[in-house]
Image (cartoon, rainbow, N blue to C red; front, side, top):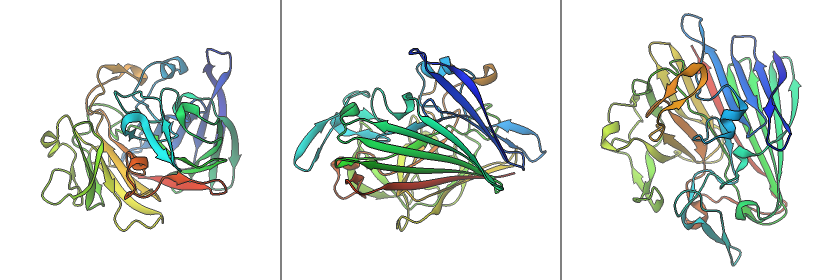
Length: 343
Protein backbone atom coordinates (compact mmCIF):
# COMPACT_ATOMS: atom_id res chain seq x y z
CA UNK A 1 0.00 0.00 0.00
CA UNK A 2 1.32 3.43 -0.91
CA UNK A 3 0.22 7.06 -0.91
CA UNK A 4 2.31 9.86 -2.39
CA UNK A 5 1.79 13.58 -2.91
CA UNK A 6 2.90 16.08 -5.53
CA UNK A 7 2.06 19.69 -6.32
CA UNK A 8 -0.76 19.70 -8.89
CA UNK A 9 -0.79 23.41 -9.59
CA UNK A 10 -1.43 26.90 -8.21
CA UNK A 11 -4.81 28.53 -7.76
CA UNK A 12 -5.35 32.15 -8.87
CA UNK A 13 -5.00 33.27 -5.22
CA UNK A 14 -1.58 31.63 -4.94
CA UNK A 15 -2.55 28.56 -2.91
CA UNK A 16 -1.16 25.24 -4.06
CA UNK A 17 -3.34 22.26 -4.93
CA UNK A 18 -1.90 18.82 -4.18
CA UNK A 19 -2.35 15.61 -6.17
CA UNK A 20 -2.39 12.46 -4.04
CA UNK A 21 -1.76 9.04 -5.59
CA UNK A 22 -3.14 6.02 -3.74
CA UNK A 23 -1.91 2.55 -4.74
CA UNK A 24 -2.81 -0.89 -3.44
CA UNK A 25 -0.84 -4.13 -3.84
CA UNK A 26 -3.06 -5.55 -6.60
CA UNK A 27 -2.50 -3.06 -9.41
CA UNK A 28 -5.18 -0.47 -8.63
CA UNK A 29 -4.31 3.24 -8.39
CA UNK A 30 -6.38 6.36 -7.70
CA UNK A 31 -5.29 9.99 -8.12
CA UNK A 32 -7.19 12.62 -6.12
CA UNK A 33 -6.59 16.35 -5.75
CA UNK A 34 -7.65 18.38 -2.74
CA UNK A 35 -9.03 20.99 -5.16
CA UNK A 36 -12.68 19.99 -5.29
CA UNK A 37 -11.88 16.54 -3.92
CA UNK A 38 -11.61 15.51 -7.57
CA UNK A 39 -10.76 11.96 -8.62
CA UNK A 40 -8.54 12.76 -11.60
CA UNK A 41 -7.58 9.18 -12.52
CA UNK A 42 -8.55 5.64 -11.57
CA UNK A 43 -6.34 2.96 -13.04
CA UNK A 44 -7.17 -0.74 -12.90
CA UNK A 45 -5.97 -3.74 -14.94
CA UNK A 46 -8.09 -5.37 -17.62
CA UNK A 47 -8.50 -9.11 -18.16
CA UNK A 48 -5.06 -9.16 -19.86
CA UNK A 49 -3.53 -7.47 -16.79
CA UNK A 50 -2.96 -4.27 -18.76
CA UNK A 51 -3.68 -1.15 -16.66
CA UNK A 52 -6.03 1.54 -17.91
CA UNK A 53 -7.61 4.75 -16.66
CA UNK A 54 -11.40 4.44 -16.40
CA UNK A 55 -12.56 7.94 -15.37
CA UNK A 56 -12.90 11.04 -17.55
CA UNK A 57 -10.87 14.07 -16.59
CA UNK A 58 -7.89 16.28 -17.28
CA UNK A 59 -4.12 16.23 -16.76
CA UNK A 60 -3.69 19.74 -15.31
CA UNK A 61 -5.22 21.87 -12.58
CA UNK A 62 -5.79 24.73 -15.01
CA UNK A 63 -8.18 22.55 -17.01
CA UNK A 64 -10.17 21.73 -13.87
CA UNK A 65 -10.33 25.45 -13.07
CA UNK A 66 -12.13 25.96 -16.37
CA UNK A 67 -15.65 24.99 -17.33
CA UNK A 68 -16.39 21.26 -17.20
CA UNK A 69 -19.29 18.97 -16.17
CA UNK A 70 -18.05 18.22 -12.62
CA UNK A 71 -15.58 15.53 -13.73
CA UNK A 72 -14.73 13.41 -10.67
CA UNK A 73 -15.67 16.11 -8.14
CA UNK A 74 -17.14 16.14 -4.66
CA UNK A 75 -20.60 17.67 -4.85
CA UNK A 76 -22.19 19.72 -2.05
CA UNK A 77 -23.82 21.14 -0.14
CA UNK A 78 -26.60 19.59 -2.17
CA UNK A 79 -26.12 17.18 -5.05
CA UNK A 80 -28.58 17.42 -7.94
CA UNK A 81 -31.31 20.05 -8.39
CA UNK A 82 -33.37 22.18 -6.04
CA UNK A 83 -36.41 23.71 -7.75
CA UNK A 84 -36.58 27.49 -7.91
CA UNK A 85 -33.35 27.71 -5.93
CA UNK A 86 -35.26 27.92 -2.65
CA UNK A 87 -36.70 25.93 0.24
CA UNK A 88 -38.46 26.54 3.55
CA UNK A 89 -36.90 25.30 6.77
CA UNK A 90 -38.20 25.89 10.31
CA UNK A 91 -40.60 28.55 9.06
CA UNK A 92 -38.04 30.54 7.07
CA UNK A 93 -37.52 30.63 3.32
CA UNK A 94 -33.95 30.35 2.08
CA UNK A 95 -32.91 31.52 -1.38
CA UNK A 96 -30.02 29.70 -3.02
CA UNK A 97 -27.80 30.61 -5.94
CA UNK A 98 -29.48 29.71 -9.24
CA UNK A 99 -26.88 28.26 -11.58
CA UNK A 100 -29.01 26.00 -13.82
CA UNK A 101 -31.78 28.09 -15.30
CA UNK A 102 -34.27 28.63 -12.49
CA UNK A 103 -32.74 25.79 -10.47
CA UNK A 104 -29.95 25.40 -7.98
CA UNK A 105 -27.62 22.61 -9.15
CA UNK A 106 -24.83 20.72 -7.37
CA UNK A 107 -24.27 23.26 -4.59
CA UNK A 108 -24.31 26.45 -6.64
CA UNK A 109 -21.79 28.62 -8.44
CA UNK A 110 -19.01 27.84 -5.97
CA UNK A 111 -19.91 24.43 -4.61
CA UNK A 112 -17.65 21.96 -2.84
CA UNK A 113 -16.23 21.00 -6.25
CA UNK A 114 -14.53 24.42 -6.49
CA UNK A 115 -12.94 24.82 -3.05
CA UNK A 116 -9.54 23.79 -1.69
CA UNK A 117 -9.91 21.14 0.99
CA UNK A 118 -7.46 20.48 3.81
CA UNK A 119 -5.80 17.12 3.34
CA UNK A 120 -4.07 14.44 5.39
CA UNK A 121 -2.85 10.97 4.43
CA UNK A 122 -2.98 7.77 6.43
CA UNK A 123 -1.65 4.28 5.70
CA UNK A 124 -2.38 0.90 7.31
CA UNK A 125 -1.34 -2.64 6.40
CA UNK A 126 -4.25 -3.16 4.01
CA UNK A 127 -5.44 0.34 3.05
CA UNK A 128 -4.45 3.93 2.31
CA UNK A 129 -6.71 6.88 3.09
CA UNK A 130 -6.90 10.52 2.02
CA UNK A 131 -8.80 12.62 4.55
CA UNK A 132 -10.27 15.88 3.25
CA UNK A 133 -11.87 18.65 5.30
CA UNK A 134 -13.76 21.86 4.56
CA UNK A 135 -15.50 24.46 6.73
CA UNK A 136 -18.47 25.82 4.80
CA UNK A 137 -19.50 29.19 6.30
CA UNK A 138 -23.03 30.14 7.25
CA UNK A 139 -25.08 31.22 4.20
CA UNK A 140 -22.50 30.02 1.68
CA UNK A 141 -24.42 29.79 -1.62
CA UNK A 142 -27.52 30.50 0.48
CA UNK A 143 -27.40 27.56 2.92
CA UNK A 144 -27.79 28.16 6.67
CA UNK A 145 -25.26 26.97 9.22
CA UNK A 146 -21.51 26.76 9.59
CA UNK A 147 -20.96 23.25 8.28
CA UNK A 148 -17.86 21.13 8.93
CA UNK A 149 -17.47 18.51 6.20
CA UNK A 150 -15.07 15.57 6.21
CA UNK A 151 -14.63 13.14 3.33
CA UNK A 152 -12.38 10.09 3.39
CA UNK A 153 -11.22 8.30 0.26
CA UNK A 154 -9.87 4.85 1.16
CA UNK A 155 -8.29 2.37 -1.24
CA UNK A 156 -7.94 -1.17 0.10
CA UNK A 157 -6.57 -4.50 -1.07
CA UNK A 158 -10.06 -5.74 -1.92
CA UNK A 159 -9.90 -3.33 -4.90
CA UNK A 160 -12.47 -1.08 -3.28
CA UNK A 161 -12.54 2.70 -3.36
CA UNK A 162 -14.50 3.62 -0.24
CA UNK A 163 -15.88 7.15 0.10
CA UNK A 164 -17.10 8.11 3.58
CA UNK A 165 -18.90 11.43 4.07
CA UNK A 166 -19.50 13.20 7.40
CA UNK A 167 -20.93 16.64 8.20
CA UNK A 168 -22.10 18.66 11.19
CA UNK A 169 -23.75 22.08 11.36
CA UNK A 170 -24.44 24.67 14.04
CA UNK A 171 -27.82 25.51 12.43
CA UNK A 172 -30.53 23.33 10.95
CA UNK A 173 -29.75 22.91 7.26
CA UNK A 174 -29.91 20.52 4.30
CA UNK A 175 -27.05 18.35 3.10
CA UNK A 176 -26.68 15.81 0.28
CA UNK A 177 -23.14 14.85 -0.74
CA UNK A 178 -21.89 12.69 -3.61
CA UNK A 179 -19.01 12.13 -6.00
CA UNK A 180 -19.51 12.88 -9.69
CA UNK A 181 -17.05 10.52 -11.39
CA UNK A 182 -17.62 9.67 -15.05
CA UNK A 183 -16.80 6.01 -15.69
CA UNK A 184 -15.79 4.38 -18.97
CA UNK A 185 -14.39 0.88 -18.40
CA UNK A 186 -12.86 0.87 -21.89
CA UNK A 187 -9.91 3.13 -20.95
CA UNK A 188 -12.16 6.16 -21.58
CA UNK A 189 -12.26 5.42 -25.31
CA UNK A 190 -15.46 5.59 -27.31
CA UNK A 191 -18.88 5.53 -25.65
CA UNK A 192 -20.48 3.40 -22.95
CA UNK A 193 -23.49 2.16 -24.92
CA UNK A 194 -22.05 -1.38 -24.91
CA UNK A 195 -21.43 -1.35 -21.15
CA UNK A 196 -23.82 -3.79 -19.47
CA UNK A 197 -25.63 -2.25 -16.49
CA UNK A 198 -27.66 -3.67 -13.62
CA UNK A 199 -29.51 -1.40 -11.18
CA UNK A 200 -31.27 -3.16 -8.31
CA UNK A 201 -34.18 -0.74 -8.10
CA UNK A 202 -37.87 -1.22 -8.82
CA UNK A 203 -38.71 2.48 -8.95
CA UNK A 204 -37.56 5.92 -10.09
CA UNK A 205 -38.56 9.47 -9.17
CA UNK A 206 -40.82 10.87 -11.88
CA UNK A 207 -39.45 14.02 -13.52
CA UNK A 208 -41.14 16.98 -15.17
CA UNK A 209 -39.98 18.79 -18.32
CA UNK A 210 -37.33 20.66 -16.29
CA UNK A 211 -35.84 17.42 -14.91
CA UNK A 212 -37.33 18.12 -11.48
CA UNK A 213 -39.20 15.52 -9.41
CA UNK A 214 -42.98 15.74 -9.53
CA UNK A 215 -43.16 13.97 -6.17
CA UNK A 216 -44.43 10.74 -7.70
CA UNK A 217 -42.50 7.48 -7.56
CA UNK A 218 -42.88 5.32 -10.68
CA UNK A 219 -42.39 1.59 -11.21
CA UNK A 220 -39.78 0.70 -13.83
CA UNK A 221 -41.82 -2.25 -15.13
CA UNK A 222 -42.14 -2.32 -18.93
CA UNK A 223 -40.03 0.82 -19.36
CA UNK A 224 -36.59 1.71 -20.69
CA UNK A 225 -35.59 2.47 -17.08
CA UNK A 226 -35.74 -1.19 -16.04
CA UNK A 227 -32.17 -2.37 -15.42
CA UNK A 228 -33.05 -5.03 -12.84
CA UNK A 229 -31.96 -7.62 -15.39
CA UNK A 230 -28.60 -6.47 -16.75
CA UNK A 231 -28.65 -5.05 -20.26
CA UNK A 232 -26.46 -2.82 -22.44
CA UNK A 233 -26.90 0.86 -21.59
CA UNK A 234 -27.55 1.61 -25.26
CA UNK A 235 -30.25 -1.02 -25.71
CA UNK A 236 -33.17 1.32 -25.01
CA UNK A 237 -31.47 4.69 -24.53
CA UNK A 238 -33.22 6.20 -27.56
CA UNK A 239 -36.54 5.82 -25.71
CA UNK A 240 -35.48 8.60 -23.29
CA UNK A 241 -33.75 11.33 -25.34
CA UNK A 242 -31.12 12.68 -24.96
CA UNK A 243 -30.25 9.79 -22.62
CA UNK A 244 -30.58 8.64 -19.03
CA UNK A 245 -30.59 11.26 -16.27
CA UNK A 246 -32.85 9.99 -13.50
CA UNK A 247 -32.81 9.01 -9.83
CA UNK A 248 -33.37 5.37 -8.89
CA UNK A 249 -34.97 4.53 -5.55
CA UNK A 250 -33.03 1.97 -3.52
CA UNK A 251 -35.20 -1.06 -2.74
CA UNK A 252 -36.11 -1.52 0.93
CA UNK A 253 -33.98 1.44 1.98
CA UNK A 254 -32.88 1.19 5.62
CA UNK A 255 -29.62 3.15 5.68
CA UNK A 256 -27.49 0.00 5.59
CA UNK A 257 -24.76 -0.61 3.01
CA UNK A 258 -26.07 -2.55 0.02
CA UNK A 259 -25.22 -3.07 -3.63
CA UNK A 260 -27.28 -0.88 -5.91
CA UNK A 261 -25.58 -1.29 -9.31
CA UNK A 262 -23.07 -3.25 -11.38
CA UNK A 263 -21.39 -2.22 -14.65
CA UNK A 264 -19.61 -4.75 -16.90
CA UNK A 265 -17.52 -4.22 -20.03
CA UNK A 266 -16.99 -7.46 -21.91
CA UNK A 267 -14.00 -6.48 -24.07
CA UNK A 268 -11.88 -5.36 -21.11
CA UNK A 269 -13.31 -7.83 -18.61
CA UNK A 270 -13.71 -5.02 -16.06
CA UNK A 271 -16.57 -5.06 -13.55
CA UNK A 272 -17.62 -2.26 -11.19
CA UNK A 273 -20.03 -2.81 -8.29
CA UNK A 274 -21.59 0.20 -6.54
CA UNK A 275 -22.58 -0.16 -2.89
CA UNK A 276 -24.09 2.61 -0.79
CA UNK A 277 -25.95 3.62 2.35
CA UNK A 278 -27.78 6.32 0.38
CA UNK A 279 -31.48 6.03 -0.60
CA UNK A 280 -30.94 6.78 -4.29
CA UNK A 281 -28.56 6.73 -7.21
CA UNK A 282 -28.62 9.06 -10.21
CA UNK A 283 -27.98 7.36 -13.55
CA UNK A 284 -26.51 9.87 -16.00
CA UNK A 285 -25.10 8.97 -19.41
CA UNK A 286 -23.08 12.11 -20.23
CA UNK A 287 -25.86 13.45 -22.42
CA UNK A 288 -24.44 16.98 -22.60
CA UNK A 289 -20.74 16.18 -22.92
CA UNK A 290 -19.57 17.55 -26.26
CA UNK A 291 -16.13 17.98 -27.76
CA UNK A 292 -14.21 18.14 -24.45
CA UNK A 293 -10.52 17.35 -24.82
CA UNK A 294 -9.38 15.28 -21.85
CA UNK A 295 -6.42 13.18 -20.76
CA UNK A 296 -4.00 11.99 -23.46
CA UNK A 297 -5.80 14.24 -25.94
CA UNK A 298 -8.88 12.02 -26.00
CA UNK A 299 -12.00 13.96 -27.03
CA UNK A 300 -15.08 13.21 -24.94
CA UNK A 301 -18.50 13.40 -26.54
CA UNK A 302 -22.10 12.40 -25.83
CA UNK A 303 -22.39 9.11 -23.90
CA UNK A 304 -18.63 9.01 -23.30
CA UNK A 305 -19.20 7.79 -19.74
CA UNK A 306 -21.75 6.65 -17.20
CA UNK A 307 -22.26 8.32 -13.82
CA UNK A 308 -23.79 6.51 -10.87
CA UNK A 309 -24.13 9.26 -8.28
CA UNK A 310 -25.26 7.84 -4.94
CA UNK A 311 -27.43 10.43 -3.24
CA UNK A 312 -30.68 11.49 -1.63
CA UNK A 313 -33.40 12.29 -4.14
CA UNK A 314 -33.32 15.51 -6.19
CA UNK A 315 -35.23 18.46 -4.70
CA UNK A 316 -35.86 16.67 -1.41
CA UNK A 317 -36.01 20.00 0.52
CA UNK A 318 -39.27 20.68 -1.32
CA UNK A 319 -40.77 17.17 -0.98
CA UNK A 320 -41.63 16.08 2.54
CA UNK A 321 -42.49 12.56 1.34
CA UNK A 322 -38.86 11.90 0.30
CA UNK A 323 -36.23 10.62 2.77
CA UNK A 324 -35.15 13.71 4.70
CA UNK A 325 -31.93 15.63 4.05
CA UNK A 326 -32.35 17.86 7.12
CA UNK A 327 -29.34 18.04 9.43
CA UNK A 328 -29.88 19.46 12.93
CA UNK A 329 -27.25 20.82 15.31
CA UNK A 330 -25.83 17.97 17.38
CA UNK A 331 -26.45 15.42 14.62
CA UNK A 332 -23.87 13.94 12.23
CA UNK A 333 -24.56 13.32 8.57
CA UNK A 334 -22.81 10.06 7.63
CA UNK A 335 -22.97 8.20 4.32
CA UNK A 336 -20.72 5.62 2.67
CA UNK A 337 -20.34 4.61 -0.97
CA UNK A 338 -18.04 1.87 -2.28
CA UNK A 339 -16.87 1.37 -5.84
CA UNK A 340 -15.62 -2.24 -5.99
CA UNK A 341 -13.67 -3.48 -9.00
CA UNK A 342 -12.96 -6.88 -10.53
CA UNK A 343 -11.20 -7.87 -13.72
